[in-house]
Amino acid sequence: MKYFTEEHSEQAVLGRLSPDVDPRFRQIMESAVRHLHAFVKEVEPTMDEWTRAIQFLTATGQICDDRRQEWILASDTLGVSMLVDAINHRRPDGATENTVLGPFHVSGAPQRANGDSICLDQKGEVCRVSGKVTDEAGRPIAGASVDVWQTNGDGFYDVQQPGEQPSMNMRGLFTTEWDGRYAFVTVKPLPYSIPTDGPVGALLNAMGRHAMRPAHIHFIATAPGYETLVTHIFVKGDPYLESDAVFGVKESLIVDFEPDDGAWKAGFDMKLKKTD
Amino acid sequence: MKYFTEEHSEQAVLGRLSPDVDPRFRQIMESAVRHLHAFVKEVEPTMDEWTRAIQFLTATGQICDDRRQEWILASDTLGVSMLVDAINHRRPDGATENTVLGPFHVSGAPQRANGDSICLDQKGEVCRVSGKVTDEAGRPIAGASVDVWQTNGDGFYDVQQPGEQPSMNMRGLFTTEWDGRYAFVTVKPLPYSIPTDGPVGALLNAMGRHAMRPAHIHFIATAPGYETLVTHIFVKGDPYLESDAVFGVKESLIVDFEPDDGAWKAGFDMKLKKTD
Image (cartoon, rainbow over all chains, first blue to last red; front, top):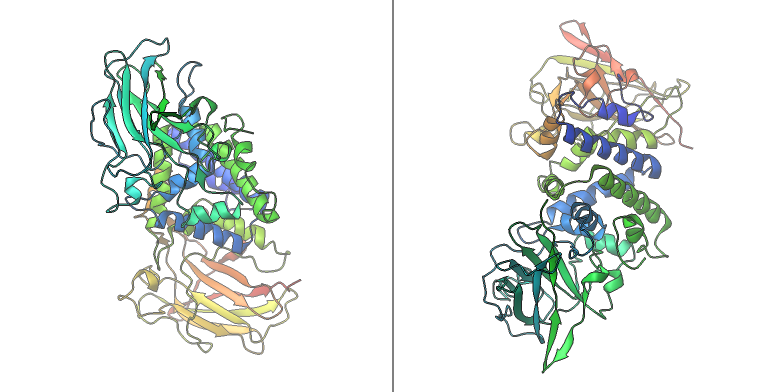
């Protein structure tokens, strides 16, 4: 094709891919360009709508910094993160289900002993969480690493309130005992809003959607020979379970939080899938 | 739908659109989400590929500033800008064809008299450009505004070399005479590279594509009662006509640049379409 035409716009673009481009990259670009052009042809954006799209794309990158990742938020709120997660972690029945990592994980959380608290600011209602890490057949995995993080008693992650919250507040790395057990003390998580002061907040608002996530605790369980499990537990009865702004909820991850001796308690067993 | 599933991922997301959302916005979001999810399902990105996509999206916004618009460049190099332009300016045969605006237009270029030069830095080979602005039937339009801009004799726009080039170098606003004629002096344009030091440059490189645009002069012609015409003229014989990095070339916009008395000359008549 010599020149671009509306009718053959995809071919004009894809015809420029070099014959010796990496095949996987070609596959991705061919699909991306076809869907992008099909979308444009379907909606026929006005010049003004196109300009607003450019502005959204630009602003979404520009608000990102070391602590804020608005593009992950965009991916989350459009269900893309959950979809990519689902595609990459199709688990056999029996293995614990995964859900999205989210943008608030921090590596290098402090290693703690089982039973220790991850709460450094004394806010919120005390909650004891414990469980077992096993293989799919229920055989305990000793020495598995359990990385946990959540919001504090005010509903914010430490990285959202630098200076206000102690660093590494509500984060900890635990190691399962000989019987696969882990245990930690935390506070009962609260529903919270994802950041709404950026382009993604404006997008949610235009869609008539709220920005709330149901209360949850994040987990990453790792053990040699097993697939890493990235997941949450959700608090049963939370009002936002069916409208999680990032679509993270799965039925099997909803857990009872019960009153227990002046505090709360919750149990969560994780069954890891062997690596192939 | 209660919870997100891989199979019904689009419905999970679109089911959240509020019933009273603006219908046009709904149409755009429904199409966007369907194509986005279809793309993800087709290519099944690995977590690592998804992360690299997030990085590309983020970096493309972050390199933007007052003078650099990398998202427009992304849209240009993927043929989206030309497609949106084509959809919005389907012109009857006879009216002059449009092409993309590009990111280097600056409003407020100085008004000049016909025959004036727009070249303030004395670089490049002198070229006289003239023509007529008419309606589709060839009747002259007096008092039409003709906004022109191009790169200088080194192949850069003034806004790409602030401090080096005089401000408003190679830009001018002309008004057609009683007979529809306009004329200005400039330099013969050169092919040039779009910026390659950002994410879009890396993307072009991965696709095995060059970043060159064939030599051209930008025009915007406006007159009351007529559709604004945004276009370029291209230099016949340019080696990049068939591989313009932004797909801007149309056959009807390729113009002879001929030697003329120690300089160059080119003619370009524009036929404007009446507004509906």
